Image (cartoon, rainbow, N blue to C red; front, top):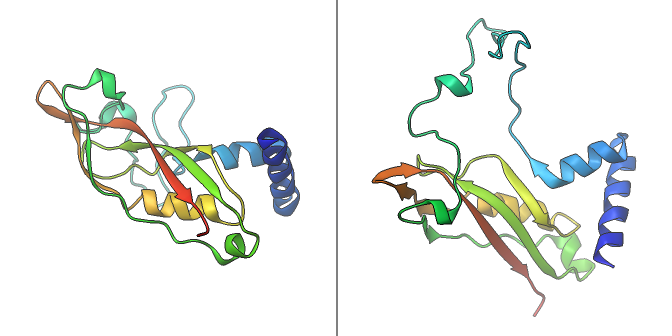
Amino acid sequence: MKRMFRLILILLFAVACGGSSTEARAQSRRVRRSEPPKDERTGKSEPSEDGAKAETKDETKAGDDKPVTAGETTVRAVIRAKPDPLYPRGARRYRVQGEVKLRIILGADGKVREEMDVLEGLPYGVTEEAIRAARRIEFEPARKNGRPVSQYVTVIYHFNLH
């Protein structure tokens, strides 16, 4: 039943956006910050319109490492504050209830990364509100061998009408 509901949502989203169902599925599953196009021969980013060169993965700082799972860390990330999301009016009107599961990256720099996966979502703007709330999470970064590292974490937001 959930699978059919998701498929219907994806198709409705595709029709509303004028894109294909493949594009809609990709957009509904992953929220990413756009990256500058890379030169296929060198693998480096092309200069932006203002002439400045964007950083490539090879040029990143030591704290911006590849995210690890909790089992790969010495000390796991500690979430200090997890703000509650707003309950959208449309979702209340249509009595939408359930949970939104997001896989987020808690960065080594103490900030939630823009890139996150929607593992389970809900319609009528509920998933978007959960994403907004997840971006405001406050935490202490995970540590591996004494230095801060980025860590994957799954967060769940419950939406219930009482």
